[in-house]
Image 1 (cartoon, rainbow, N blue to C red):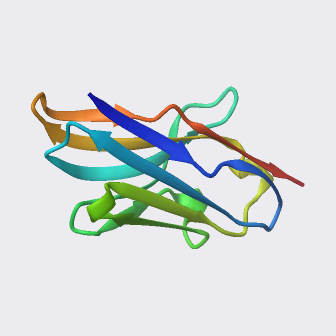
Image 2 (image 1 turned 90 degrees about the vertical axis):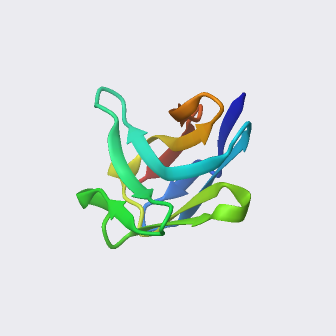
Image 3 (image 1 turned 60 degrees about the horizontal axis):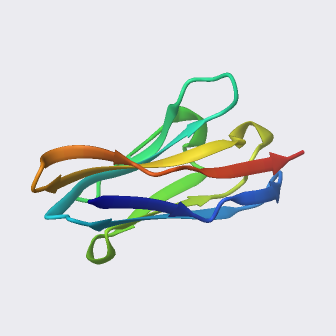
Length: 119
């Protein structure tokens, strides 16, 4: 069994900051890519940022320069520092982890955490 658990969402005013965390635990040999996606009401889920096991990163165009993704490999944890938040950043943020375990290489998703940015 693998658990992927997000934390750190909440309500913030425009221009403010939030930090999300996501930890993977359970039957894990190694965690490959970890990333954040978001889904606003009526919209498709979109990439926010992901980070590979070598530390390289990839960001969605709408968050470049404002959000920073990082990871702690020893803790199988990924973080998303969100600065200069805008109302359009309001969404449920989901953590995605590509994990190698006894079942092979599989994608696991967290349950999501709500981020609401007020204008």
